[in-house]
Length: 277
Image 1 (cartoon, rainbow, N blue to C red):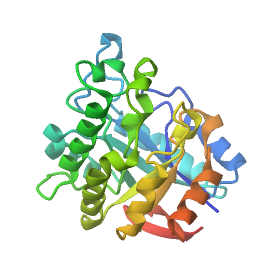
Image 2: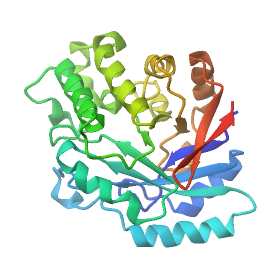
Image 3: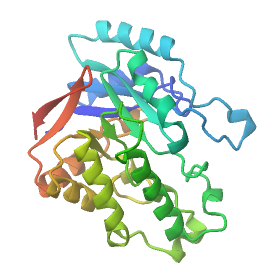
Image 4: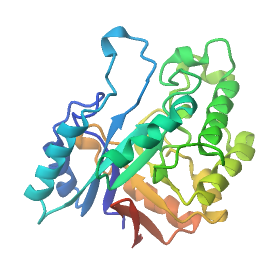
């Protein structure tokens, strides 16, 4: 049984208004024994709406102070870990590598929210290209981020590997249906490199509540990761509101078991801890 939600946001992330304590109380209500806040920090994010400038610039000191105070307050009811979701891009990998070591994080997710200076969240990402081209571009950039000569290594798991498919514009959905086999060459190369680097991936359940009604990454990628020898895997609902804490964890457990996993991971001081499913 999965009892740790390892991808969670509060009002310290620019896209959430939920107080950290409300996320904690929801976690306790859902029977969790451990959580990790993974607040957003996306250096050099390409904002297209001027009023949003700085939305994903984390106030590290305030975040640490609040998280540590709540760790003490709820120590007898819930383990609360101090984490980070770091948005990476190929041209800033060296800068990103300096960030995790500046604070005592328990856990760091590396996420690709941007590809070729555009966020797939916005339909303009696909301007001038096909849907399939946009998806392939995204996976090729992830491979670039994790490659042998990449300068970024200060992460524990790569987040929502097929994030790009969450936001295929509905008005263009008839152009292409996302298929694992169309990108299996890239998935295999990415996962082999992640495993070689001693890192892991996450099973992110937030897509189950979105139009794709699937996990990120999809179950086929989870199975391939296991077949290639991957062992480090965390589970997170990517909740930005209390109601979504631990969302879809029953489905996540089934996917992991069907893929051959017998455990999932949490982290303490950047080291994995394995838990039986």
